[in-house]
Length: 154
Image (tube, rainbow, N blue to C red; front, top):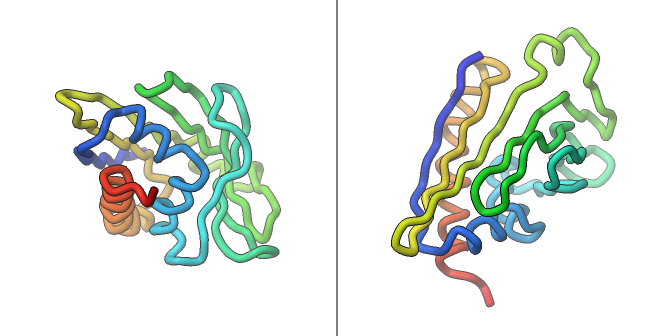
């Protein structure tokens, strides 16, 4: 499986970036880039060993990923282990389609120097068709994260 890499420098402390990236409101804002404006959210916990569901779409037709948090070192690193798809609100972790790629990891690393935080994202590609989508959307999502970290709405 190929790993895709994305990086951005954000003019904010790593605690601000971490809390914005993983907090509910911040997550919904930057991750909406993946849902093309139809709404992104998560259900569950970012704590190590906990289940988490990444969802997009309108109520009743939620789709996304069924996952667990493989590792969480606050303000430094979080690893998401994707276990399957969610289609129309139903989890699929057992189909041949899912077993062809699962598990797949998505890792976020945070490092700070002189008040600027570098965020590195490493995503295991679950299908070649997704690479073009990821290469288009991740830079936009990270630019949105940068904007909301550097220019809070408060």
